[in-house]
Amino acid sequence: MNCLGADYYSSGSKIDKLSTYRPGFNGEKPTFPYIADDQLYYSIGIKAIKKTEKQYNVSRKVYIEPPWAKYTSPKEIEENKLMEKLDFFDFKKMKKEYINKQKAHEIFEKVTCIGTMSSFFMICSYLRGMENFLLDMAYGDKMAEYITKTVKKFCLEFNKRELEILGNEADYYGTWDDVAGQTGMLFSPDLFKKYILPYYKDLIENVKKYDLPFGWHCCGSIHDVLPLMINAGIDVFDVVQTSAKNMNLENIYNLYGNDIAFHGGIDVQKLLINKKPKDIKNEANKIVDLWGKRGGIILAPSHEIQPGTPIENILAIYKNI
Image 1 (cartoon, helix red, strand yellow):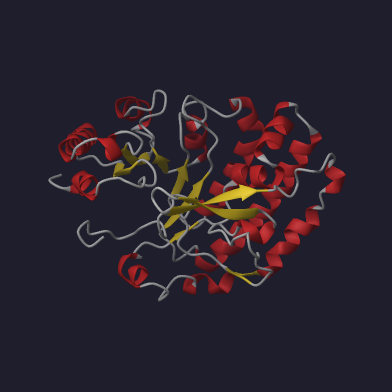
Image 2 (cartoon, rainbow, N blue to C red):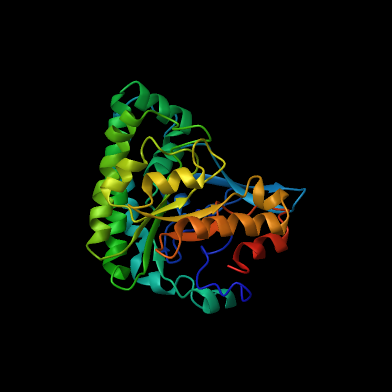
């Protein structure tokens, strides 16, 4: 971190830790084998366990047993139960959540980032179960309408309270929602416009009241809906997964380079883990040459760096640029 001169890291090693400041939670904590995940999803009944990749001795969280999967009717979901969870959060503790817990935070947390409980599609999916929620939307089911209405109400109120405490002091609002895969959307753009986009329009409007730049993360090939999010007001698109379909940097630059900034660009799936430092340098210099001196790119790996990636390859991104 000292070698890179870093001012900020996403609260650890994971892409989903975009928010470096989170409220305290005074409700019930999960017990073994379940864990308290970094996104605070456990606070609304979403269960996670830790799964270890023995080859690299790396642990990842896996969400299981979606609490709303068993429901067959909106009547079984109690809207107020989710809203009542807000009473267990202590938003006044947001400023103290990480400070002095680790020496690294004292050194590198020069950028204050907020945005917890804002990943709308993922929260709906973890509550309902991914397969169930996709089917709900595909069939235009009343369940999809009720779930999105209920989760939207909760998320917007959560982030309203978050912004009231730290909005004037924060530097960046970051959120993530993986609505796409390697070759395209997980569901149709029309369903995105119907169920997902209205939430983001309201969220971005709330964030802009505090003059915060809004960063949105999504993996995969996102062309079908990225223009919609640009029109909704995002400032930064993260993660620019260049290995996905039609997501090469030249294409991204030509399509959206005049509209938003980008964060990412260095492929972690093939390039960063398998190639030599000289190849990494060439890719980084290509990006710099493409954007020139006008700005609009935050050069970085396209996702969390994979276990087994040579350190010299990571450093090569930033050296001699």
